[in-house]
Length: 211
Image (tube, rainbow, N blue to C red; front, side, top):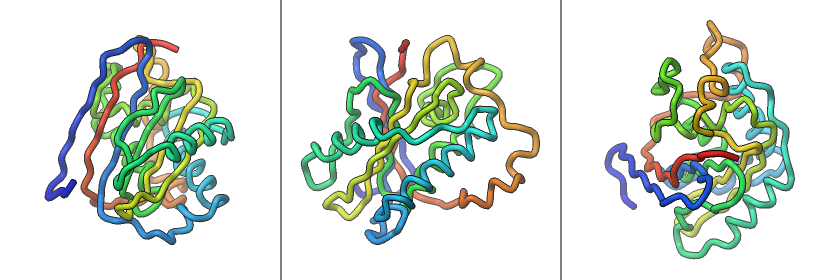
């Protein structure tokens, strides 16, 4: 897809049980040799640092890396076909966010985290524009595992799985807490969460109704 401006596309499937919230982010071709993509240790560290940065700012405990979740994400990516990879959720039992086209993993997760600017903490409900953020900082989530794939269009595709799943209806007020006072000027900003203007398309599979 050729993007000339920021656009959003939402895909909602009919629920058969609980659904998984997913995001696909498209942008310019990514550097294929970026260490956050090509080095296993750097990839894992970047995922945890970026994820826990946002979680700490919203009174959620750090998540740990889970190889089972990472293997699930990697297997899902490896099963994809086509030049640009498939923009579809896995339908698995975990919470799930997808991103595509960012220069590195840190900026991919930043795109999810920065949706907090649009989240209504007073209302405390699911919104398609902020569901990746709410999964990211969901307090009950304890584990994360991610996979990545270099698609034939030259863009990296990131899949992150979360357990326990977030975005459970009726639990948003308790599970998604407001940003701590002064958090955006905290030393955690030095972890590499920096702003960047990128073009993206968001694709959703829907909202969870339970675990």
